[in-house]
Length: 329
Length: 243
Image (cartoon, rainbow over all chains, first blue to last red; front, side, top):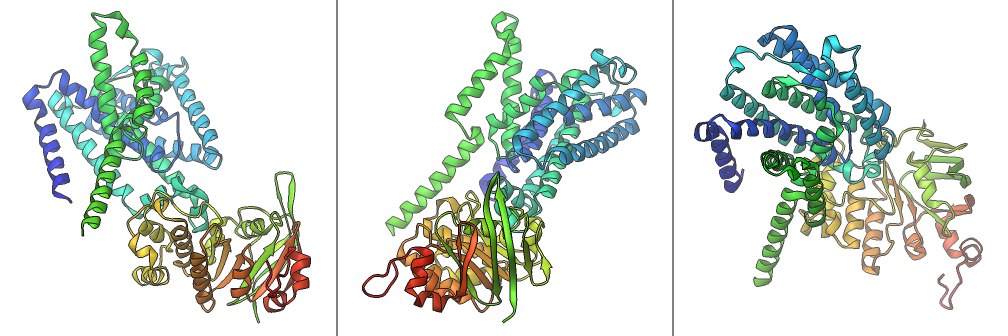
């Protein structure tokens, strides 16, 4: 690892580890917990859109399924550790089955149709979660309040639990995208027809990428319940979850992995600030307008997102300095 | 000589248009078989059908004793058939190195030696090793595209117009490389550049409006002004060369 990169990693680790001790376990720490959860969610989405070239408008179906599965099992088991583990296990099983079904139905068709299918399936889950026949399980539109295990009762414990989750997800995704499998995914994104001619079974690669992305989104949904101790149909909402994760990924930088985390940080911080301002200025009640403007500005001035643009500039600088050095010798 | 690839009565439609209406050819091992024909004759469609991108109805494609008709592209590639399309033949945002590594079969244990061999064959790629393929010149791109196919040591290589848009210097080098490969593989080459085709080709099949209209040895085809005029519309200049 390069010294600069190592220094950045150490600094950010120290900062995140020490944050609750320096700033207390209040609003800032809670915001960071949300950023960690949505950051992991956005990175899982980037694996799909940025590394495989698949656009999904229904990624909330995984996030929501994770949240509901963990919440239901926790509420039925009285917030035990076994309940938490079982909740995650059930969530992961449902996620795998769901991604296999959606992949089988739609990954062979054109990307536009795939996006539409995911949108439709996501809506089905939204309706199901709020439906009256399922009230005994989901508590319909009233949502479920959850008791978490005793060892997760303090804010500090939740913070470090989510931080460890984020670290594991980041490390895993980093290794994954730099593995030969990740290389093939990038090749598919670049030129699917060419990849076929080289003997790669496109459908299998896409399915596995979709499955993995869904699995991480599901785990992030489960973590959301640990942070919020509550779940409602909003976790399946297209506007506040599915499109928000698209926005986070685009703002941070598609195909940069860590861009999703940066995007989540910016969007959630902005959301938080606008909510605070709305108390004094009612105009800020409509945060969607601000996000719309942000989206237009990013697409217009930073088409590669924040991290993508920074990486591009660094690459250009290296290229120019190398060319300059060569011309000097 | 043993036929490695046999194509019989190939009919292919794209949408409602019948592009191939009876293409037949037989390709012998360790030869360069050139597909010639006017624009729109069906040369590229023939290669795409052989590679499984398009499904022939009816028609038979046989590679050794294996019937390839209706088989998925990735499986055809795994039988040892390499394809270098006319366009879109690279991963533009990946480096030269990544392009070559992705082209190697998973089970290939001689990665270094295979890549070194490609760099010896196309030395221009050595200097551009870490550059994204999209930033290479036209000639370098064609060389990388060819190297990407060759690195997997295909038993049959389908090459679509490798000389398109290249300077005479690069055309010569591509021609030299293909000639060198004759002993290692079998090549089906679609080529508009008749000078290159007659220089390196052993056999020729001429297509016209989706039909095979001529098949034979390149030597006799290149020697006959009448055949060239009849099938390709080539005029003969005073020095005896076709143009």
